[in-house]
Length: 69
Image (tube, rainbow, N blue to C red):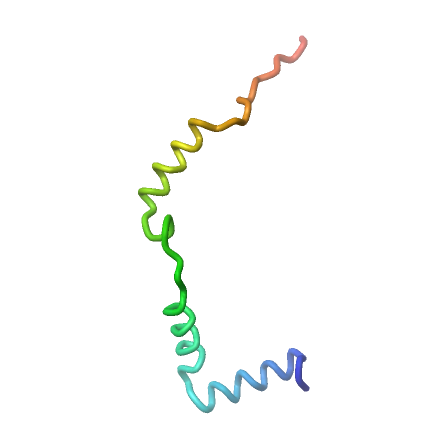
């Protein structure tokens, strides 16, 4: 049953039967292994940098079109 939904559910049951904290442990390993930093670590800095980028944007400003009455 490899590769099917039923097989996946069966494997999950077996993992939880062996170790009730199985998924918490592998999730913890992945979280500790992550190396995200930069703006994710400092939201205030991201806000300042985004504001600076917005001020020097090369996009044209939106203009409001007048409707003919």
